[in-house]
Length: 267
Ligand code: SF4
Ligand code: SF4
Image (cartoon, rainbow, N blue to C red):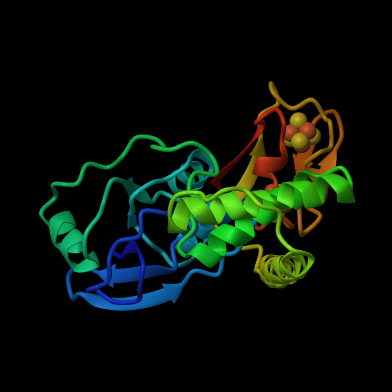
């Protein structure tokens, strides 16, 4: 048996992190020997799909139970498909959470307890809050004018974290350049993490325990999932078809389906 606890640090005395997909560490523990292995979360900076990727990581590490604060629907579905018990609402020190788990007093949750993308806007530091504010603004912009305008929202985001908002005044050109540089660095780091993740997923042996499955009643053959697949495992005929050989069970396609026709199941 191996349990995983989402944590703010790598040790038993660190606090449980309430986020599943974006916790800094997964502390993997043998509850009998209390032997631990700390795994730094490679999905921390992912723009989307961190819950599914982290769930896949748990399956790869042969975790049998996960202790965390919150778990969204995509992550829950993937964990559930991998046969991993999910226990939510856990807080305090990792050591205490494990001790309580061993008493058998934690109920296994029967579904997600938060909506999709919960925790994406919960920055751990003022700096990360600033980055996310800008990211949304620029991403939603139809052009440079709109993107820059939304960039002003960054100031509001920081105010929420550091104290009450002050009277609005537009940033100077120099401040704006600094903000944009900082945002560019953040996006660069995020792109690097995504690129590394793609390489990792693409190289993964197709002997994963999970595979994508298509609900034929829901699939409209729209093809939106094809581009999401890093291993070219999806073709569309009358409905989407998943290649048994190519699918690594990474779950990237799930979030792209407008019909919610894709799930992960055991092979
Ligand atoms: S079909 Fe592609 S994107 Fe979907 S789970 Fe399989 S490998 Fe991942
Ligand atoms: S995105 Fe969904 S509906 Fe569209 S082809 Fe893929 S599985 Fe079918």
